[in-house]
Image (cartoon, rainbow, N blue to C red; front, top):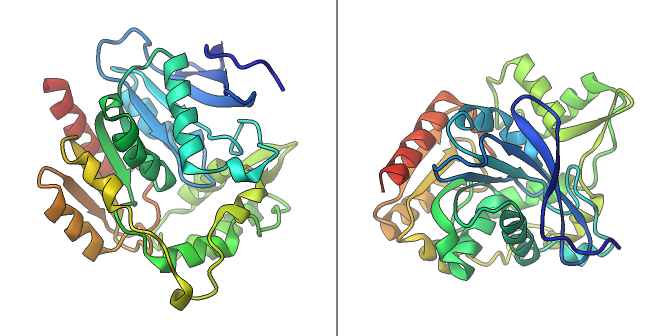
Length: 303
């Protein structure tokens, strides 16, 4: 393994972002996209993706925010362009939180607004317990204090189990099979973008963009009667003094409307947005989502 390196190396890859790599404590190269001005005085935004997702998911949001502030979008170990871990047991939220904090340190980010999609939102809540001073604000994208078992069952059914599509048309059809009920009005061009963000391009063909060993990290649940998903209330409650926005997809099978209401009751200053024709998870490129994120960030900037 490579010698751990707490500083980030980078190369310019596009007008709007740099590719950066940081070496983890155990020698894995961790990838991130670094948008915007590193010297901006405004609070940076750090974007954390879902279980099998990657930094590409946040491109549109990052481009919207980065003219004024720095935006860092991460690939966890085993996802996207980060190294895969030989031991799948290291794919845990706690290790991913520590990786995230190390990447932030390597990039000179002492505190940030965290935008966490699904798994990323869980990491943000854990940070609120372990390192609350890092958080200036949090956006929880379709994740909350309780996780509905229906969503876990659905995700467990496809993670690491889908064959690589033969071409990009098939990649779109594959996504539609597992997600069309969540996004019933999504235009075809956005399905294509969804596919490009989900799979990597390897010599013109789509390939899975995460370690299939992630399937071993999901609970072995046969039916909802077997479910024992621990609630995340102790972690969510740690956000009480942190400006928080929750974005929920109306068709979500992971974050229910009932759970969202209970979260409002527990966090009096939390605000939320439910997006129509979205399920798990909203893309955060929706006009309403961007407007809500803008309002949260403006509130934080004003102090």
